[in-house]
Image (tube, rainbow, N blue to C red; front, side, top):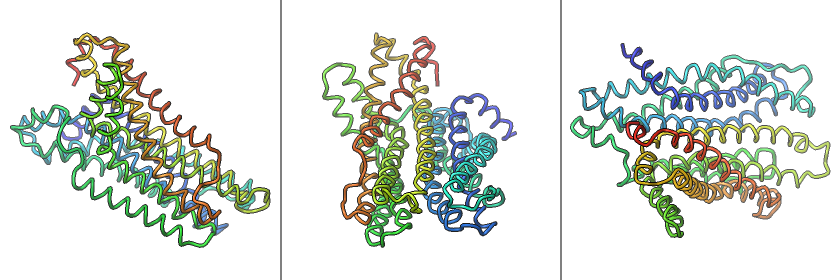
Length: 444
């Protein structure tokens, strides 16, 4: 009975759950690719310096990136159903039944998505392996292996992240007393935006990231330098993403201070929905931090080995750029899915604005201003994460705290973040505005 109800619920919210499924599948593919390389090195015993050490280092912090992306997307999907879950509490559903329902629905979505991501993961692993072979870093004839490590790292991590997000996100609605369920069904726009557990987790991750940055400064120059510099930026980015809602009011005041009623409305709206805005900005903070940190780390490495075509580091550079592109692509998928899902769920709000005489154009401008505020906030916090990676790495490699690389690359990352937000949010808002205002008010 519970499984049947869970299937019916997933079908009723298919659009929202598809967003989670896409992220889970993409994350599984990325992790499975690294896991396949690692298993190939462990089984064959060949070129363990590249088939074991490389995927172990890169795959380790990629696992954190994927887990955060999956948790963010699944959590947002469940949070958008808080009204429905609260209504279940009002008709005598127990907290345990609500939590079980959420977990079952997440498993129903995650399992096929994970299965769909394993095959592309084999393809990604084969592409990276081929690049290593072409660079002369791995013996010709080495074939990718897919066994227990491949399944455990690829499927296990994604499933644990999805179920963990379901357990945590389901607690709020499950803990609401029945008499308060209907009042709690409305979106929370005031009050504390950061729980104590969230602050504690953020502080712990920031401490970890700064510790890894300090450890990088104390390391000798060598191939293992990125094993601490890369994770340092990831930990700082995730920590800042968790604290993002606390920084939203300051960013919102910038928009509210601008002339124009629409801009002021957007600023006040962002401030009132600080928790929501922070959740949307979180994957974008991670994208900016990872893109800037890994790319400038590689350009700094390239500058040291410029002109040394036969050097191992120079031959490894194309492989590293490919891996960075894969991670950035996954992060971009998370950002787009999060923004589209969050914007589409605002039909009722847009309907109320339309009934209050706001035009479609004004609503779209408001969404654009909100997106700009979100993007700027993400770029600022993401830049701190970039520094956590590049400053210690560059200090050891070149003696300078400034990473070697073109300035246009940072401008492209920042501009790309803004563009990504606009391309995701504005079309989604335009689609939501196609619903008649009166009909939109009935949208849960």
